[in-house]
Image 1 (tube, rainbow, N blue to C red):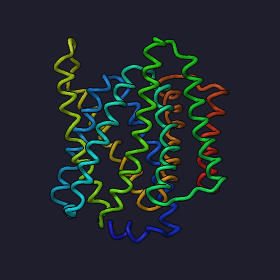
Image 2: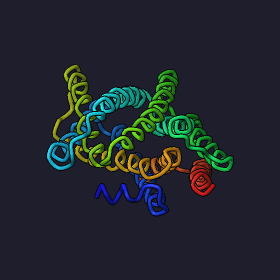
Image 3: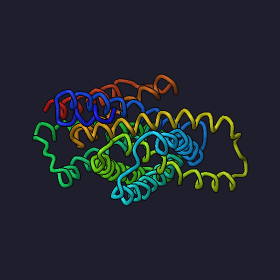
Amino acid sequence: MSAWLVGLEGTEAGSWLAVGLALLAALSHAIFGALQKGRFDPWLMRGAMDFSYAAMAAPFALFVVPWPEPHMWPIFGGVIVIHLGYKLFQAMAYARGAYTVVYPVVRGTGPVVTVIAAGYVFGEQFSLVQWLGVLLLAGAIFGLAGYNLRRTTVDRRQLWQALGLAFITGLFVALYTTYDAYGIRATADPLTFLAWFFFIDGLVFPFISIGFYQRMEIKPALTPLMLRGAIGGMIGIVSFGSVMLATRLDKVGEAAVLRETSTVFAALIGWFFLRETVGPVRGVLMAIIALGAVVVEFG
């Protein structure tokens, strides 16, 4: 499997596979985010999901894939620090603001910064047409957040805090996307990186969640929390694994932009499952997000 993936790097088939993986990451990440913001407290849910995907990845990391090369261990140390920062700020944002407002701000910030960072780190260049696509996509995402912000009825003071935290989370998205792309390209076997990534990354946050759980006055039942966490863990592997493979096969910036079509999937999830109204304004903004992704890919 690894040899087949490596053989696709730099080919047209690899480029198209990267597009499919980035779009799969977009859909699965919207579901992943909705699960974290859903029925249970975001701090508890993130811990349950991390524990689940660490447990799923452990046997593959320890017994199936080749062990990482020595130079990969410091890289994995950076993974732990960056992703922990991302999760902390994301949980704080979700705890304070509506999902339909916070999520677009996070996802709108990430691609613009990632494209710039990928230019410096990997020497990637975007054409003027592609930059137009990035601006279309990011502008429409922020427009979606602003529209949802106007319509929300939650505490405004707390919501502005959530928006600030969401923006910082978006910067962490750009940082981990660029760093993970560097990491998965630094090893000979991309599946080794993925297995060890999920195993190591899932070990820290469950302890934070346990401390949070112990301080709660009304504690939720653990069985439904862990069952939901197991589902989220599987979806998380699909989401983060897909986009990291996409950045190995093709341009980091393009994969990052395509993944942010997750805001379209998030809006559809809100409409279909949460009975939220999409309406003409949201519909147009979602269409512009999709158009921006198409312009970036074919520009």
